[in-house]
Length: 224
Image 1 (cartoon, rainbow, N blue to C red):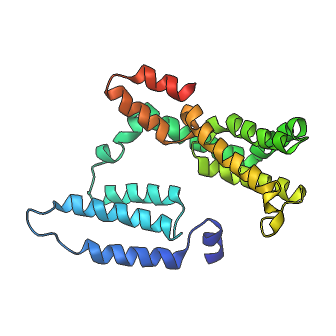
Image 2 (image 1 turned 180 degrees about the vertical axis):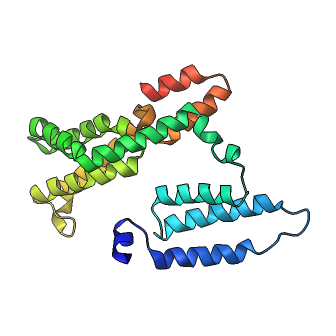
């Protein structure tokens, strides 16, 4: 069972440490007038969630859902407050994009797209670099995280660099590997700003912009 939890990204010992620490802090009652109890409890839940992800105790998705459930069952938040964000169409867009990203990664579709483009553009080192940027731009709408896209692109870029005789632990790393990595990293930044769903912060930015009446401008900047 423990091995199964570890394969799922859950570390029971680390998680227990986070829970025990949070439980002890939970029992500390703020002085009157400093913080309302619900605010103190929500702060602890939030910090415990962040700590669980940082120390690798839980995957970020499990930690986020667990925090939402805990905040509800402890009456820190009402169900209406806890799920208010899911009524926002932009938040639903992010959720759907993450689900699609998981499907693309699990099916290997991202890898296949990369290899198809490499086969057509990868005759030179510059062609290999362009093929990585092109792949990133194509798969970005379905990956609302440049970190997630790195999980698809990095192994491919590394394999291409080694195949070209450029190894990261040797002096040859600057022959092609450093160039391919740098271009790939720059491409991630470009694709994140190119598509609305290429980064989870983009829809949030659109939502903030819409509150100030500049929704049209925000969409144009994010889509083109």
